[in-house]
Image 1 (tube, rainbow, N blue to C red):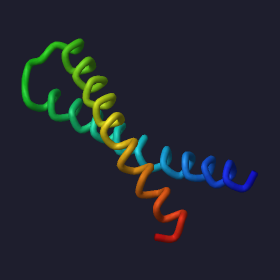
Image 2 (image 1 turned 90 degrees about the horizontal axis):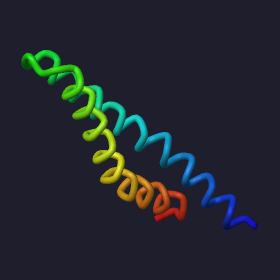
Image 3 (image 1 turned 180 degrees about the vertical axis):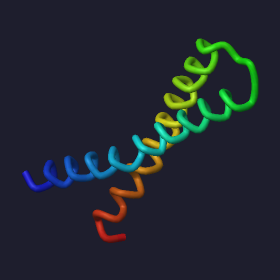
Image 4 (image 1 turned 90 degrees about the vertical axis):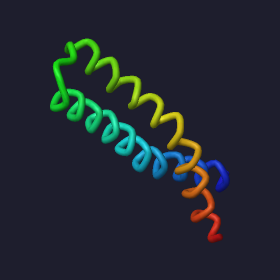
Length: 74
């Protein structure tokens, strides 16, 4: 039972790290696309969603493995 609790805590701590990273990357993309030129709103929003999803895919396993390693004490 303790193993399940540790896994749950690792998942929650990881989500509190990688979700803001992904949302921040999407917001930075949206800001850059808005300031950089005359892109239509659909392109800016679609690009921000795409960047957010890709950064979520990339950051999730990296962050989760680091949080898990620290939870084990290594």
